[in-house]
Image: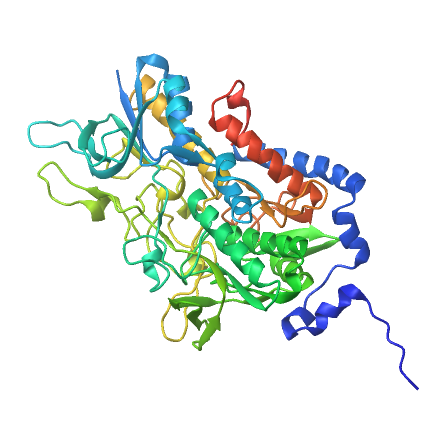
Length: 59
Length: 489
């Protein structure tokens, strides 16, 4: 009887070498958020505010 | 009327000269000496190197900008500094050799009241056999993205590889070409932009892309790494960098000193002393940096280069250069005023000043080969230092010797860094990071050395938008367009 495989695309890189196997790899949801326009627009505002604070503290 | 001479027209030199001229007005002279005819927004060279931008989009001619500002522009390279003048004159001066303006090869002496060394680095390709051509330029075996012209060439070579990858396997190697390199961030951006473009071109499956660098761990970036708060944890940049490489199927080789490069092959030594080889079809390896090779002479003509410059060719300033072990390094070792200790009317800004020591933990192979990143001095610190130096010199000119000298220690300033991982309005990504302070202060922030409220990083489309906006914003600022002073460094 053939074994049914459960293939999760983002998890396949773990098996490619030992170094990959010992780190974290983002799943589908985390990767989707990286290019989600609405989420990224909010992050854009937050990152800008954080950077402006660092710039102000540095001058 | 006082004369300020600024050697160098990069981020630090341009910032110093333009602010000094604005504050001094026409009562005093500002002279810029730079061998380049163009100003280059270097962070965007990455996009030139993958064909996403043209060279013309990342450079602009300096002459009209300086003419508009009232700055005396000399397209020339600085050759020597004479801080005590010469026989028969106490007036300090520098010697220059023209590289343009129809005076190529001519030499001249320029007297100064105040001097700023903002010459940036010499790209020391010849430090690694086969990385350079033996004449100080890049050799034929690898490419670079350090200048806009280098990036244009890199793109052309990359396209050849992409073409071949349509039918056969190709190997790409990106990273550092020597054990003492800095600027890992540029290589980091280039490797992920190549990976992004390879996917778009449909050739990713035929490309083996590998990272090789002198960092002792991924994510060191010459700053000893950084720690950030994520999901309730405080974690090292190592974890995030490794995650990014693993996600994109990019293998890494770290702690590597590249000691020889031939056509399609390089030899390296690792921190554990082992020697290895890597073959490649395309390699972009960042060269180590050194000072540009300025000489200095006293009034009698005696060579005092060693007095003014450190062994690596960078200028000595008000740092603590006493050799001491890593455990005794302090934030206070780092300079605050960027003033030369022997000649108080000479300053150094940006990459041109000699750091007191590394930021990353020093490391050597059992053979005694130092393999560790040297300290980065990116655009934001260079701009801030340049502006502080301009402030100090303007004060000295206007108020005399007891004027207030501005301070800008890298152990008290932060840096914002946006590392592109692929260009595209809706598909692009970049790692947006800030570190505060750049040089860790373990007395003030025991544990990580930095304030984790202001040290963070995340990857996404928002980072790409920021990087793209900064491209236009900083070129706008450098062109001195209306409101340029409102844009922070």
